[in-house]
Image (tube, rainbow, N blue to C red; front, side, top):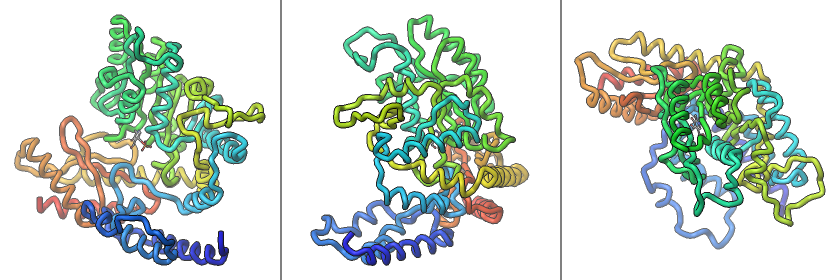
Length: 472
Ligand code: PLP
């Protein structure tokens, strides 16, 4: 650094900016009002030849970038899965960026490797992951899920790592999901050469949970037809409705047929730290892998996804490949580059460590309970209001519902009305909700997960919905 005092001033102005921003993220329109191309048009077509002063860059950040930001920190962000970055985790990210570690080999930062092992165990214990499992941090659940599928493929003993999948006689490999499984599993199956046709959707019950009997039947039929089951994916908290597949019963089917069971608990898995939700992990000890996302509902900023595996050696068998320039004499240590595609890895464990210590398990439980309670309160308002209906059970902090005024509108008209309603409420800038389709019906989806969301924010959202519904 040329002049430390310049850094000090610049850092102080960023700190002031963050303080102001986090002090009241609610003053911005939650959904950005930018139109396509706005930012591109406002920036020069070429990078500057000469360096520019920091004040000018920061001023442009505020003037040009912020209008194109949708504010996930806004207390009335209720779309997708609402999240928030705890200030203490932002501080940890700053420190991690300062250290700029590439945590690939133990020696490239022993503390990064060892802190990752420790926080993964802390989190695993809080959630109820078996003590013998290994936790590894990835950027997202999508990559963690892909990695688990790759380990499952390796476990088949088909020498795919060595010989590939083409130009040889292999059985069709099958992956079992439901229509509610997150799309990254299908993407992973595409990338791993399994093929979309071999991603099989098992029927669900009326609570949108996988039917173990139907799964059992499908696997038996596939085996009889000479196919090779690769993995079953059970979801604890599906993306649309947060339904929960019956993991224990699915695990029994997986065991009977010797199939890898991956549990996608990306959203709801963290709820298992609350004793009332401990049951979410029932049957997990009989699974092979599980993913949970602290960057969804544990106040850790993007990105941090935790993959737990029963047999870490399988992950290494799937991914370890050590060129000469990365060999070491460090002995019996974990080199996290051996556990996935990525070589250089960010020091993500630091922010989770800060969050776990700063909130404490009780602090986290308290907030998750509050979010669930707020969602239940919102659902009770919808249920009690004439002209509105709930479209799915709401066990956690997400509620799916629609406006259904008296007068016998057909389904297509209701879909169109609710789509207009969604656009109208989002256009206010005072709240942001997203949608899904449930049994073919357009559903508005309100998700609570932001540390700043209070009862008055949820009440304001309900008031806006009622007001705008009268106009669609
Ligand atoms: N699994 C489930 C159940 C999800 O809901 C999501 C995203 O919402 C994902 C996986 C993907 O998460 P990520 O963005 O970490 O890849």
